[in-house]
Length: 480
Image (tube, rainbow, N blue to C red; front, side, top):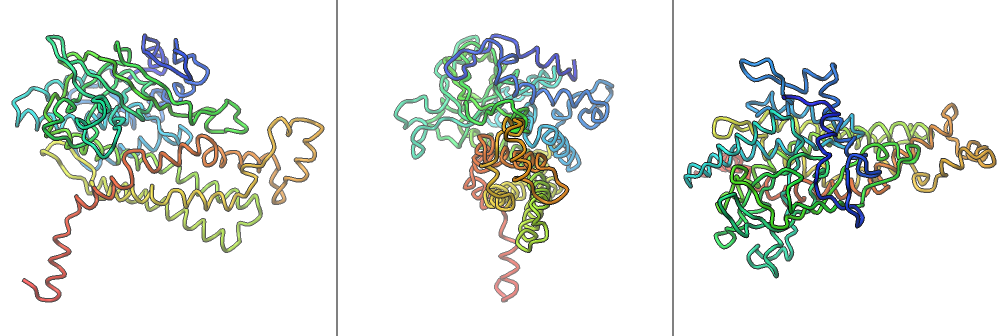
């Protein structure tokens, strides 16, 4: 099949998946008044691939074949592959109004990690996980499937290991196995765009010990698998009014609590089963790819900060104010630092097992930590330049009402030559992405998505080799 059309993708979601939204079972996610917006957003991935302007960029061929596949499935072999991956993630996110499409990005991150770790598991334990992983990878690639990943367990008491919890299902675990496969039970949180995916991959969330063997499990299932239940979060959704919500009315993501109610996983889709010593390495290898994806999709949002600050400062007549120039420089430096670190992570990639290029973990985590640690302050810079009308402006209905429109046009104008309605639309855009439900979603996403601030700092501290610096200082003072 190779690449699919947008229509074929949307039709593929019309199956028997179990989805709940605000207490009701959803019959068809592609026609639901709220969920269909996220489906259309995800479908941009397929729309862009069909666009002649981007077809070459977004696809690739295998040696000896003319058939083209989605470039997301291209296993990175060098820095150029990773830089191209950054480019296509950036493109999709820009087309998505600063929201990344996350329908192949995260799934391919997981496939790359499984490729690496499954081979190591086989070498140590004599299993055949790698063969299963590669068959599954080819299946997803050849059918151009949309994929989601469930990694984060609900955890319960975070000071306890999985086997120490009040009840054993705070972490997803194997509860049975038979000739057909394994049976798993538990739940995963913060699973993004599961509603819009064909396939769901599951991997561990943390390092495990021998007492937690049942929790060391990785596998994949179709979204309509019996016992798999998606409970959709109602937060971050807005109405369809494009005047008040110019981005989120057309683009948003869906998050689910993903429940595995004794789900049977066929043996051919089991990629880790009890090999507890590889739970941590699999989780870590996945985030090494996924944090690179994360910092790649941040760039359009940071460019929005710069552009919106420039335009609203001009509309307010304060573009030349010294404090505004200072804030603009800080916003520019913020955007360009994250972008430069992302590219550097690709240039400094490591070739694991002589086969797969992994972005440099130190530089990747520096980019992610720098973005997350500074996000709220830079939102504040933009909001400070914009002013209070972000949350006190009039409704679109008042602008259209002949009895009130004249007052709004007269009293809410800004710099001469800039129409009042244009100024209000600019305020609405900034509000939509920084102070609305979606704005709150962005604030939490910046801190917790792809790992917390502490997780990034821990990776930097663990991965950075201080020995050359130590030896340099020793040399300066003549120590052996």
